Image 1 (cartoon, rainbow, N blue to C red):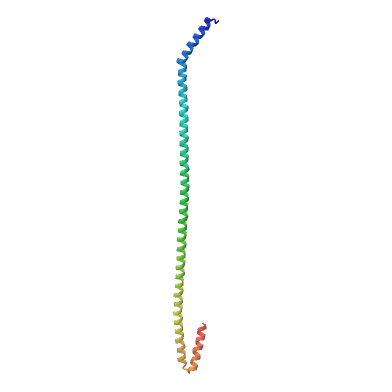
Image 2 (tube, one colour):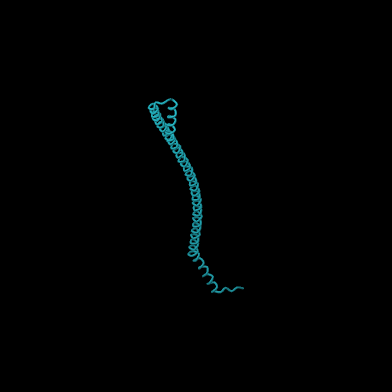
Length: 160
């Protein structure tokens, strides 16, 4: 049936020896190399996922910080508007008080001036009355004539 040839046997033995040598020296090292490389790739993927998670966490923190900064900005602006409104009201109130005080002072000054003019007018009228009385006495006229002189004098001095 089968004739086994010496070459065939020699080739089969050589293959078996080559297989065991390669298994001992090459496949062991190649397997450990492939295993190390697989571990490196798995570690890199794990590190990448951890970095991605940390980046997403950092992004969320930044969004929260930005949101809180925006809210703080709104609060500061609102407080500034309220402060400006209060200051505006204070300035308007002070200006109104000052205007009222100035008007009151002007009215008081006007009243003092009017009183001064009244006193001056009374003094002038008194001087005129004395002057008229002096003329009447000097003229030593009758009563009807005295009245006419006083009326004439007052009309003449009253027009001035």
